[in-house]
Image (cartoon, rainbow, N blue to C red; front, side, top):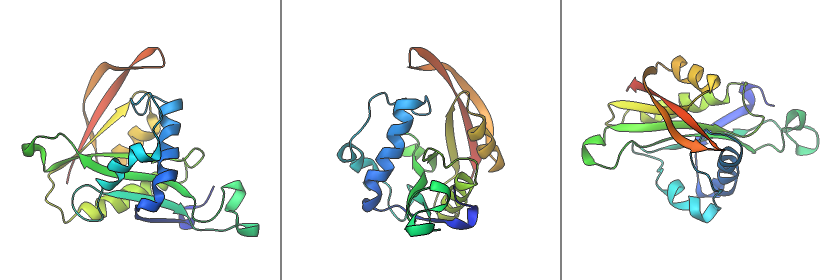
Length: 184
C-alpha cells in the first residue's frame, strides 16, 4: 500500500466509472456501509457519477496510486500506478430546495487501501473544493459499528447528532446509522 506521498487526489472523471463501481460494489457485497443490496453495473452508476460535477456543491474526488513499483506495478502488490484507491463525494442531502445548502458526504476506499491516510487526503481535497460554495452544513451517515469512519469524521470536526436505530436491514440483521454534522 502506498505512503501518503504516493497518492494523488483529483476530480473524478467518466473514465473512472468502472473502478469506482468496482469499489462501491465491494461495499454492497461485503459490508453494511451502504444499504444497497444488489451490485450495480457501471451503466447503472453513470447517472450518479454525472451528478458530481467538477464545480458546484456536488463533487467527486478520486485518490490514485502514483508510485510505480518494479515493472510498473504499485508498491507492495498495490497494483499499477494510477490505480484508484478510493473516492469521496458530496451529494445532495435531500431533494427539497430548502436543503440546497446542505450536503451529504462519504468516503469509500478500495479493499486494502485503509489505514494509510487515503481517506484523510480525500476529505482534505473535498472540503478544500467546497470552501467557496454556498454551503452551510455537511452530514455523514455512518452504519454502525465503523470506528475508522467515526474517527475520520471526528478528525474533520464532525460531531455526532443522533443515531437512527435499526434503520436498515442487510445480511439478515438490522443496522444502526449514526449521523454526524459539520459546519462549512
